[in-house]
Length: 223
Image (cartoon, rainbow, N blue to C red):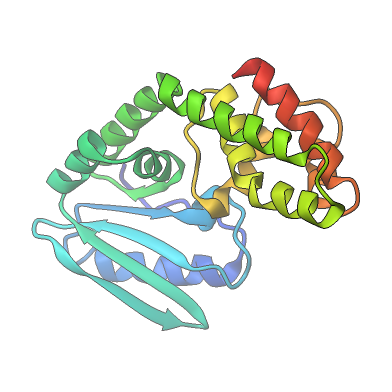
């Protein structure tokens, strides 16, 4: 990747300006690779969202944070060797972070090759059977406890099990569960999901217990 980095995907001018400044400093200093992650890379950032940067150097550098223009900037200073090691040994969350990031400087093509390997691994991902059993157990247990529960208790059980239900929806799609901040964006994108406005009902505060019963039942048939 050569030439001027394309920052047109960034929603907010403050992020574009800060990122251009970061690149202006890093490129003459000999950075080997540069990528941006998080909501800025996904195109879902708010004007005040953090700027998550990964810079690749011949030698690793300490993690840095800085606040500029009321935006928190986080700089991860790694080597390309560590980047490959992260993919080989990293968690599913690490792989998801790599897949969603945007590469802005990659003269040797290393980051592009890493992302290609990450996407290959994610495409081959299948939810482990042990994880499916865990999810089936918790959802079945919660549905049982909802029977005869007082309204306040039913609401509490429903809300405290929502994350497990979200994990189960990912499992039905053989999609590794993302970070908490990404789950909200992912659920409507899943190709296999219940019909109707199930997510709005789960979060409405009015019909949430019945919606939970219906969605959990739908999921259990498919787990």
